Amino acid sequence: MATTKRTLSCVSCKLRDGDVLTPKMQPHGKGHKGILIIGEAPGKVEDRRGLHWQGRSGRLLQRTLKKFDIDLFEDCVCVNAVNCRPPKNRTPSTFEVDCCREVVVGSLIEKMKPKVIILLGTSAVQSFLGQRWTTDLGGITKWRGFRIPDQDYRAWVIPAFHPSYVMRVESREANTVWEQDLGQINDALDCRFPVFKAPKIRIIEDLEELRKFKDYDEIAIDYETTGLKAQRKGQRIICAGLAASDKEVYAFMMPRTKAGRRPFLELLEDPTVGKIAHNIKYEHNWTKERLGVEVQNWQWDSMQAAHLLDNRASITGLKFQTYMNFGTLIKDEAGEYLYNKSETDAGMNRVYELLEQEEGETKILKHVALDAYYEYLLAKKQMRELDYQYLPF
Image 1 (tube, rainbow, N blue to C red):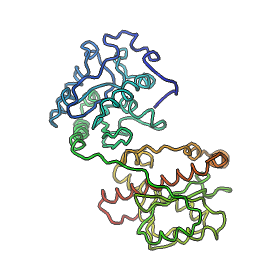
Image 2 (image 1 turned 90 degrees about the vertical axis):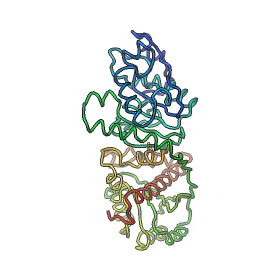
Image 3 (image 1 turned 135 degrees about the vertical axis):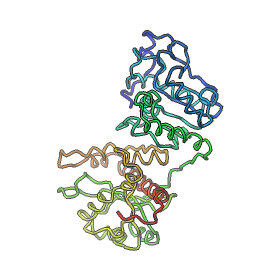
Image 4 (image 1 turned 180 degrees about the vertical axis):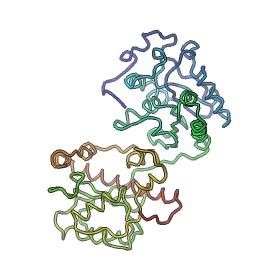
């Protein structure tokens, strides 16, 4: 993740000024199949020869790719997160990765336009995602195993262990996982890249419009609230998002009166309409505590389904699931006001501060709308993957 908003470069890093034989090592490989491989940093052998992947790690990578009919230097272009050898082959620092990012991501990817990008190890993940994913990035164990349709670069992204790790642990399981991950490359090359378009966001002023949702089999619901604990005094639901298709999504500010909320409450209590949420417990509890009704016919919890599909820690959040499944990084101007939900100040976040700003209401409505939209897309995808029409949570 980026450590500073300053423009960073080789001058900032200074690795090239050290005991380096091949400073600023250039990308290597012909890239006939449109594969870009991002590693960690040059080692001693690479630094001496002036080429990437010349040592033991490189030989393992070459042998493994050959199993899938991929030639490392004919079919791929190779580069590293840091392209000057760090002293004593140490792991590059986050700052050094930041300094080299423009060379790796800004220049090379834009010029090459790869079909598939392989991220080998944590430094490669930091290089590719660090500027766009600024909190809770995590390491390679969080990211490996996924084939991500990155919408910014229109390329499949496949994170995998660095070959040096596979050699170091000498584990049959690690080698199997490593080969399974790299085995996704040909599937990605053969698969048409999916382009996901942003939905049309419709802002509802009169909640009578919600009565049309009674005709849908299922809808995704998302709330933005003043904090985490619905039971605490002064807490309230600020707005809600509803999605029932992959084309458009609806959002509205929550009316203060029960009469104004009536069409929404009737929809929540309608047992013929299935309800979807990313963490049912949250939406159900807030509905009961603050709106005074019980939601009927919860049908799908996309957070719990994500856990069923992969039970690793820190990957079930909506932001991660949206990027992993759809390649879209959720970017908005409201998040910092909504997610700072500490236990101080009676557990209140900063949503009121946002609403006092010009366009603040528009920003939060866009935020809640897109959350509902991606919850809906995610749930429908999970239903297909789990081969369930209904899965009770």
